[in-house]
Image (cartoon, rainbow, N blue to C red; front, side, top):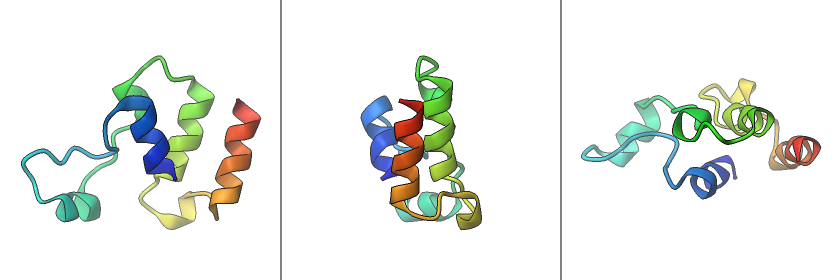
Length: 75
C-alpha cells in the first residue's frame, strides 16, 4: 500500500532501479524519502508513507489498517 501511494504521489518507485536487477534493488537498495522526490508533499503525509516503507518491519505500521488510520489523521 505504501509503495502504491508513493508511486501515485511522485510517479517514481521508492528505490532507484534503472539499469539494475529490480529484485536486488528491492532487497538491498535504499528507499528515497518521498519529499526528496517531491518537496511539496505535506510533511505529515510524507512521515506516514516513509514510516510505512521502513526497511525494518518493526519500524513500520503493524498493518494496512493502521497506516490508513494514520493517513486519515493527517489528511
